[in-house]
Image (cartoon, rainbow, N blue to C red; front, top):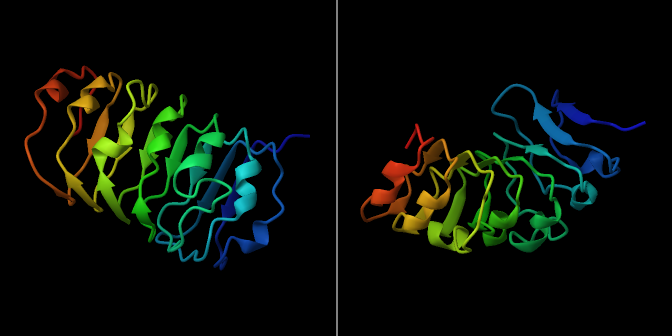
Length: 186
């Protein structure tokens, strides 16, 4: 029997530590409950074994530590989740840089790391020629990102939503973004 989706109804849960034994065939992990939630501590490293994981929804918590090394030290091993389509880490207390290797996730459609304490530039994230081929929604708002908006964002031809507000960015909006056919929210 395959567990398709693990929905955790928060109801007093304050840590993901009790979930250390996770079935490797899980397709989605969501924390559902009154928002904002109060989950603290690290994401269990065992979640990196979920090679078929398609959705990681841990929005609106207080997860203060970086994503564990088994998933990605905040760079690398997150790309070991090749089926990942939705990465929702909105409004936690994550620090550091956004993993640049996320761009290699061929199936990632929705990346939401808004409302954290992330630093760096968008150029670091969009550094490879063919990145985020399936990305439709990119939420980088309310962080401490610097630099300008890279022209390479215009290569994301199916991008629909791009939220960059409330960062420390400067410069002009690249002309090419006006020609992304599906971009409706900027």
